[in-house]
Amino acid sequence: MTQTSAAAPVQGRLPVDRFVVGVALAGMLILGGLVWLETAPFLVALFGVGIALGMALYHGAFGFTAGWRNLVTKRRGAGMRAQLILFALTSALMIPLLGSGEPGMVGAVAPIGTSLVVGSFVFGLGMQLGGGCGSGTLFTVGAGNLRMLVTLAFFIIGAVVGSIHLPWWLDLPSLDPVSLIDSVGVIGAIAVQWAGLALVMLWVNRVERRAHGSLERSELRLAPAEGGVLRTLVQGRWPFVWAILVLAIGNTLTLAIGGAPWGITFAFNLWGAKALQAIGVDMSQFEFWTWDYPAMALADSVLVNITSVMNFGLLLGAMLAAGLANRFNEASRKPIEGRQFLAAIIGGLLLGYGARLGFGCNIGALFSGLASGSLHAWVWFACAFVGSLVGIRLRPWFRLPN
Amino acid sequence: MKAAYHRSRVIGLLLAILVLIMADHLASPTFAFNMGDGHARTSLNQRDASACAPCGAPCPSTRQ
Image (cartoon, rainbow over all chains, first blue to last red; front, side):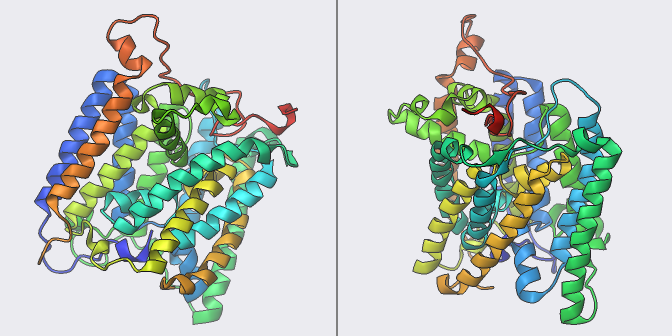
C-alpha cells in the first residue's frame, strides 16, 4: 500500500461518491454477468472473493510495501506484525486443507534456487520504487491512482520479459520445491510456520522497542479508531484485524473453490502475452508459453483464467471502496514529477521481472507460499526484504518520501 | 470540493477494458464451445498438478 493512497480515517460526515460507486457496481454486474453466462459458477464465486479482497485491501490500507518501509525508516512494526498475524492465521486454515489429500487442490509451492533468490530481491527493490507490491499496485489502480497505473503497465511488460527469460534462470542451480506438509505433516508444518513467524515478530518488536521504548499495538485493535462500526465498515478505515480476517478467509476460499491459493501476477503475464499475440507475436516460440498452464491460459479467454477473474474483481472492489470512502483518484491530485514517473517505470519493470523469476509476488509467493507450508516462501521473504532495503535507500533520489 | 477525476475518462477507460476483454473472449474456444462448436478445446480448469510452481514451471530435477 502506498502512503498516498491509504484510506483516511473517518472524519466528520463523508459523502459517498455516487458516480464511482455506481460505475463500480455496474462493472461488477456486467463482468460478473459475463462470467456467469459464459463460464461456470465457481468463477463467479471467485470474482466475488476478488471484490471482497479488493475492498479489504483498500479499507484496511493493508500494504506490504509501506509496512516494510515503516519498520526500516520509522522503526514502527504494526504493519509488519499485521502481516505476520495474517500469515499465521492463514497457515492454520490452509495447511490442513492442503494436507487433507483432497484431489484437485495444490499449494503455492515452488523451486528454491537462483531464480527465486534473484527474482525476489529484484521484486523487493521494485516494491519500493514502484510504490506497491502485486496487491498494492492492483488495488491502488482500482482506487484511481494514476502513478500506480504507470507502475502496473510496466509491471506487465516486466512480467512478460521475465516469462521469456525464466527458462534460462531455471537452468541455473536450483532445488525442487520443499513442502513442509510432506516433510513434517500438517501439525508439524503449522508449528514450523508459526515458530518462524514468531521469531520474525520478536525481531520486529526488538527493532521497535529499541527505537521507541515500547510497541504501538495498533494491529490488535478491534474497534475502529473513529466512528461507528457500520460506518467504518462502509467508508473505512478498517482496523488491521478486520482486513486480516477478510484476507485470510478470502485466500482460504480461493483455495477451496479454485483448487489453488490466491495469486495475482500470472494474470499480468497473461495480459501482456495476449497483447503481444494480438499484434502478431508468436508466443509459442518462447518456452514458458509452451508449458501446460501458460499455454492453456493463453489459448483461452481471460474469463476462464482464475487469476484474471479475481484481479478484475479486486480492481472493482477497490474502486467501490474508494468511492464509498469518497477518495477515488484522491492520490492523483498532485502532478507526478519526472523522477517519480521514472521510479514508477523502473519499479514496475523490476516488479514484473522479479515476480516472474521469484514465482509470484507478495501474495502468490509470500502470503500463499507461507500458508501452503512451502519453504520457498521464506527464501522469498528474506531476499525481497533485502531488496526492499536497497529500494528504500534509492527512494530519496527519485524524490519519493520515506 | 472539485472532483479529482474526469467522469468521461473513468467511463472511457473502463469501456476500453471491457472491449479488450470481450475481444479476447469472442475469439476464444470457450465462446466457440458456448456457441455450439463441440470440438472447441476449452480449458475451464487450467491447473497443472504436475507443475512445480504456480506459474506452471517444471521441476528443476526434470529439466535437461
